Length: 403
Image 1: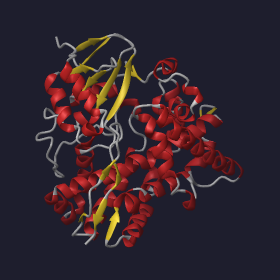
Image 2: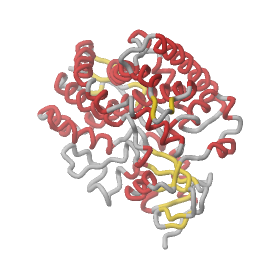
Image 3: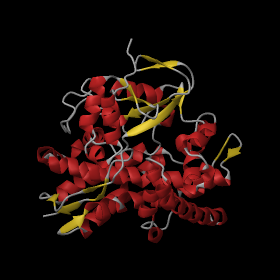
Image 4: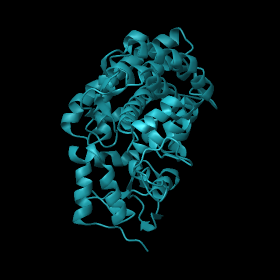
């Protein structure tokens, strides 16, 4: 039977992943952790899995869930006094059944495949407009990777176009709490969360008086088996959808462009055959996923990665590591847009599978072929600046030359 490994090397590898040196390129460290053992213990007591099969099991096993509310005080004492933490810890993102089931059912009735697919013509139009404005050299994040998804999710939610640009910095400040929570992080995250919530409260109030064909109006009206979202739940849900709706997609687009520029033969394949886009997006999600890890807690005594684990243990699944597992993906460190039998872990799994996955995929499938087709001489115009985060992997600045 496999044993949980604790060693100075494991501690050093996991420590490096919390610092800039490890976050810049975590994949060699993931490989080494997987070579040492399928499951290791971090210094804070958390169990870490890095194999694809084990990450899948963690995301899908109903015997694992999110940390129950009474445990939040142990992780972040006084969390209820911090708007950034309160807005995160009371959201669907970290809830468990039956609350999660009710909240997801209510929002799923509004966030439908039909509503997402209806956006396709508008996304095509937005992509064209953004590409038309790009000339010479540009910061890809500022010029394209941020404005496209923020306008798409803004349109879906019903946020007026002039109000959308302010949210890039606000959401980035708020979502810092997904990494290491420190007093300095909370100094910027708390006011950002408050500003986001106050804005959405005003928008929801307007929609109650005058409903429109948007997601905020649908959430206001959403009802399932006699249950409606409370005001607090509605605002928390709207903030979560808005943040997730562009933060992940912005990083997907930027990560994809960097990967393609580092692999010009693959970029040429996509440029010459835009029909590769659906499979290409899956491979780009696998190769450098925007969401690198997720955390769960065991409800009962179970086995994880073949190891007996007691109830109440925290388990961290490194999705970025699972996506590079050679047992699942031959030559995992090679970008192959034509890779068959792909199945990236990038949107999680089980009951917490990302609600916005179809929208993120649709945006990338439209945007990336259009970008490389419009600018055949696309190249770097400077050194990309990476977001200093492990949980959320992306870039704050990506200088490109359009040719």
